Image (cartoon, rainbow, N blue to C red; front, side, top):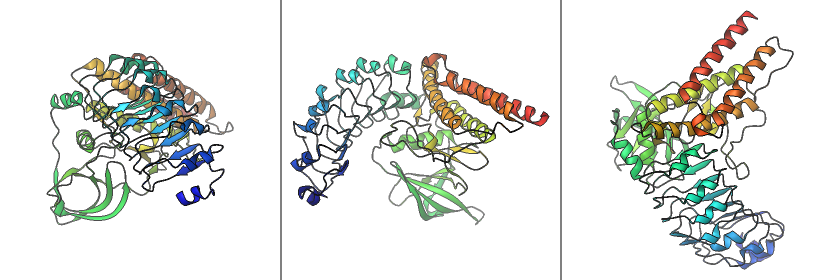
Length: 454
């Protein structure tokens, strides 16, 4: 690609990806100024950007992860159309105040050495997604409270001993991760660790890889049981690195705390006696009839999942999914766990509307001894459920020729009202998830009775 760039063969492209050991910014990139919108320079050895980067006047997105930057370049703030900046896994210890482009929607500074953020971040009024896991932060600038569009915040694996009071009142915050801080270490110390079975690695026969995420690799496996029979299971072996959501050890702790539940991808036991001392969990193997409810957000949608175009749920499927995931969240909160990433792309479902909530990479332990803080954090997650409910409702339609159409209309209207309550700007006015479950149970029963009598 670099050779093509230098030969002038890339004129008119909108996206450029260069990962080839670069130590300097190739000046030929400026020849693409009339078209270039996305620039990915991750995986190089860069430590600076040119002072005239703003010549790329159409640039919207820039990735410079896995490089050698020690400072977030001030020149970023001069790029008038910049909406997304990614500088994960560098050596950044300073974030220049001038680097905060007011147009930013998505800022990724995961896995650096940042101790403080500039007050100028408060001018990023369009900020929706802020990824700060794996740094050395112990506080946030009060000006960040002005970023009232902020929806997803990752603070895991930092040095917070307390959270700013304003943080838990942000009107649109829905996905919060704070595990791996002194604050949450104290939460964990205050609760009794649940017991879990230890499963000897030598009783596991690992099969093919099912998938790989930021925190580890999942494979199918056969588990040798005491009765000499084998059981099909799934095994997750964790990596040791910090992820965009937090630390693998925190994911393990949350997964163990939750245990098994009909609507959760639960844990059967943790692995012991691994020859390489790797940490891992043994989980039930999910039937192939289950598929992901949606795909993760893309560069354009930012905080919203991507559903297949043909997605459509019957009202019965919608009710079943919504109630199941609400029950899963209720179980989590009762166990003192905040999921932190309650999204459709972390939900498996089948054709009967049965849902399974998984992926605890962003999970945090709740401060159950501090009811006000715990309830505020739970209500933040209730907003995430409300967003999920809104997405499900947008993919639910029935013909007005159907005999049950009046029931459909009335039920959907009630669900819309619930969705509004869950996502209202005043955090303290939102219901707790147990109340949501109670309402959905009542609505489900009412719909069944109305259908049977029609």
